[in-house]
Length: 366
Image 1 (cartoon, one colour):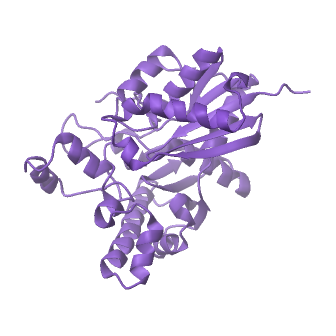
Image 2 (cartoon, rainbow, N blue to C red):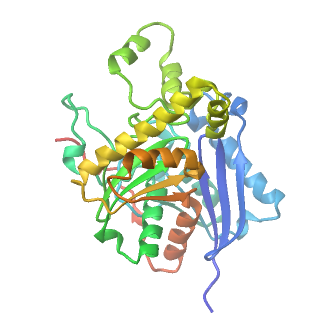
Image 3 (cartoon, helix red, strand yellow):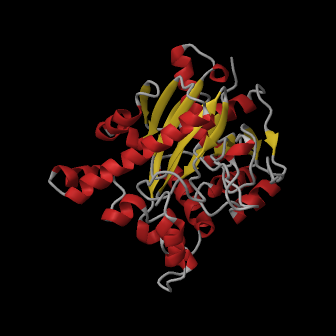
């Protein structure tokens, strides 16, 4: 009989930490730990949340009768690193050091490897990460900007995007390495990515800031107006960063990041809500068009995934603009915890060797 491995998957997000416990490929516990906005505001930086989030995970497991000492491997989403190739990584001291710095920019994903490593060290077990947001498979021409030495970087929902691609290909009985897909992860942040025969060759940047507006992010803006805001004296750097990356988009327009609230407002006759809702879908479709260009029009399917993909009014509106490019397939929600657990199980069974993080970026300029 196969050995049974207990796997704890940890995925910190902007306002929650999702955890799930598996025995091999069977989920036995799943919980979304919600973090009140007023609590998170007490921390100056995302990194300062480490102890709080770790303790919340530990308390939640204990409250539900699960002993962390019985876990064989802890696996997290990862983040905060130099660019890396796709795959599973052993959590090493260098990886933790870089994650703690949040090298590409502060994001809760950087806490995952650190939480897993602290549990692994405490109980004498292993810690892994899988397909962090820092996965970089860009083609070189996708990196160039109009300022010498300033390059576009790959920061996207690599974990869920790769998993959704795998599931789509499994259903269609095709190989990921043989198809071209445009995958749109629609959540608090939105990443729209061109997948060319197994590689994510271009996308918007969900950390440094580009792409459509989202429930919490401002998206593309006229940069001269951003400069005016930056030098107006009305904002500190931290305040402007939060306005662009955490309190932008729907949150800035309406004080809510919940798409359902905005739809209710629009349906009740609020013209502003209606226009902004449609504008957000329109901006998503424009980026789909851009990724279609990256694939030279050879697109096998456009896949809409993430939590907002449950919203039919929104996905229908995107399809209205983009379905001439290729079939639009809606695969709502996300499968990040399942993907992490499956990767950890492959490592524990000896089916896959984890990579070692070197701290050397995939691409370091011309």
